[in-house]
Length: 186
Image (cartoon, rainbow, N blue to C red):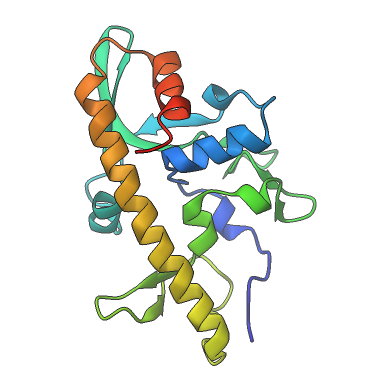
């Protein structure tokens, strides 16, 4: 069965959207990491080919920056490597592995798969070298389970963002992080 070839294409030059759950897990397992240094709020271009999917799973977050309300999607703040490419802050270019693999964001756990409208596992138009082979029914069943769990997690995330957006006014990034880390029940 073809599986991840560790090409790293999914960790380069594309946004990694994250949820509050992702931030909590990263903070729990990597407490010395300054979360505010790795997260950002960004806008997705209106012509982005996955904008509809992004809007379905990732509600926009409101936050105050320099006395102005900013609205956008929560994501990892990319770094620039020696070649000038944007890469995920957790991507290890030497090993082609994720430095937080066991606790990586939800979107990374299910990539490059998604469920279609009928609930079947389908290949997302990914940056992978080659499509993964779905001939292994057990693996497909595992992926389907992960995707269903992800769908539930995105629903919780939407409720959490809705709760934050009701109280965001005049609250900065520090207060945003405090809200995320303290509000574990959605």
